[in-house]
Image (cartoon, rainbow, N blue to C red; front, side, top):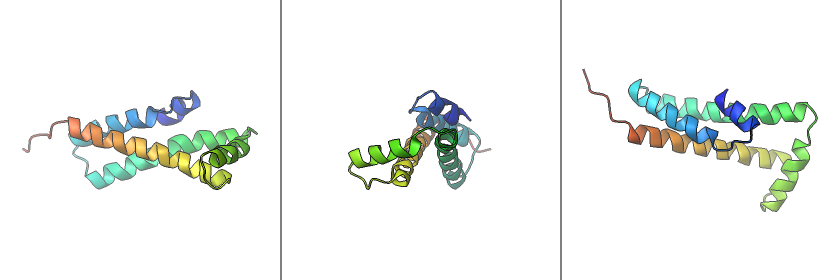
Length: 111
């Protein structure tokens, strides 16, 4: 919900911040890395995917804008390509944040 709310405000950097928080939580919660990677990826995709879907459902010109953005980026001018790249950017940000959060958090002591 945090990523979706941030993207509704145009805050493109929220997946990274949520990824850092998840990395810290994963370290202290002793989550396996595999679980943390899947959770952060799912959060990023749904966090940016829901606002995109909601805008398209309400009649915004999301598809036309995505086609133009894809063409300007040198990608095939299809809305699905631009939206997939957009979701991929969110996932990369979130995974980079997860890595940073885990890297900056000390390992909990075994006991």
